[in-house]
Length: 269
Length: 327
Ligand SMILES: Nc1ncnc2c1ncn2[C@@H]1O[C@H](COP(=O)(O)OP(=O)(O)OP(=O)(O)O)[C@@H](O)[C@H]1O
Ligand SMILES: [Mg+2]
Image: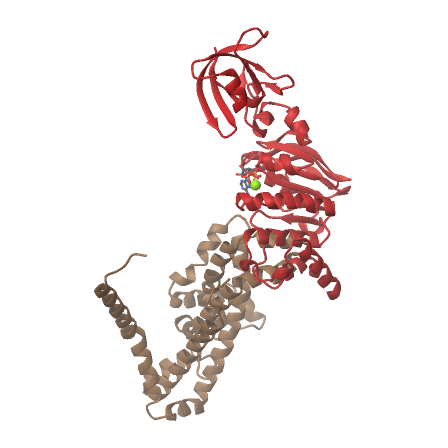
């Protein structure tokens, strides 16, 4: 390794730490401080507000379903992309990045156009069949799945590529069928990538705002998620409640990441 | 009863990896697939194992039509050059894999794993992870894993290719002894002619997707089918339009032998017990000759000495032929 002179090393450290502090640590700690300014009062107010409680439940449902969907499709699509050759593979690979590059607001509008029950191309037949997508839970789940889709895939694809398919071939030649090979060989070797991808997409799903705001219609105690409730309470000058809800969101996300970094082995195999 | 490969061709895009290959690999023997890099050895082995599909042709394994059987139904043991160890499983679990897939009773699995680990001298490493083994140990584990399911045939793709020369030689001798114990029909790929000549009962020489010759090590060495096989199996030099081994040439200091080729010594190199000469004759390039030190001293050759060259009695020679360049 190249030795950097000591003063420069110190400068680099100070700049990095200062940068992270100003950008992340300080603002987030202020949210925590404001939340607990009057002891547990803010949290108690928030948790006794039925709007907030409903929004928390809504966030739980939407994020939960979205994460399960992203887990299944994410692992499936990753396998497809790495292990199989098919026409249109490059197109698919590019499409997967779209949610990362397009603003969630645009995602929301796009879903609205396709699935609204008045003149949506798919929305009308679905509505006739009794399934309301827009301004209801299905649409919110779809929007959340959409924005968080690439996170599992981005984690899993490089690991699958690195592991290679020799172990899978060995399993096959030892008599394992496709399903057995997946459960016994493929999945254990990408386990940590999957866990990490799921945590990232859970954190992302908990925090989604723009796309959900558009497709949900933001109906209080119906389709309002926690992020939406934060915005609304803040604008209604219920600062304490807003900070408490924001704190709960941040806490859940940080908790996930902390748990994973404790569980994750030092040297991921 | 054997492996029968009939009319197998395989293309990768425009590239012909195997061109109408037909060969019968005898039962219960240790057969080497020998050839230069890129010749199609791995491709053929993987087609036999069902890890790759052929474009045309058929495969029979011990009398069973296997052409369209998926890999997991062929009951073939495959050993990969880079071990393909299951990294998240202990050595014992690796070896037990095939048996657990076959849902054998627990105590039977344990007994069989013990037996195999003893066979490959890894019994004290049963609980280690593959990452905690040396390359040679990993490869022995892979071998035990493949043998655990009692495969009809055992296929090894350059099993010792990634190991250093000494371990390689040890494992090669060990494979030979192991085969003498278990007698399973075994095919191993190598591009090392010494390895093939030393270990195999039968050698299949493959080059550019085609089979050049099939035979015992002696047959190949003594009666090479063509100049490719001859030059692939050991050093050769060219004398009078024929390929001959440098140590199969007699060097004379007189012209009284009929048909001897006259020349002049241009270089003398002494390496250990042998003396290598370069002899300039009427045609390029110089002929190389290998003598023992005693022979060289007896002749008194030095740079500039006039000599006459003739193949030893019983020497193997093959006419040099311009190779057909048919596509
Ligand atoms: N999946 C593939 N796609 C394209 N070309 C391939 C593929 N597999 C093999 N080939 C080509 O087919 C030819 C034969 O390959 P193969 O691996 O059988 O050679 P080999 O005799 O085993 O060589 P080596 O001793 O280097 O392993 C090579 O030229 C290789 O580039
Ligand atoms: Mg090969």
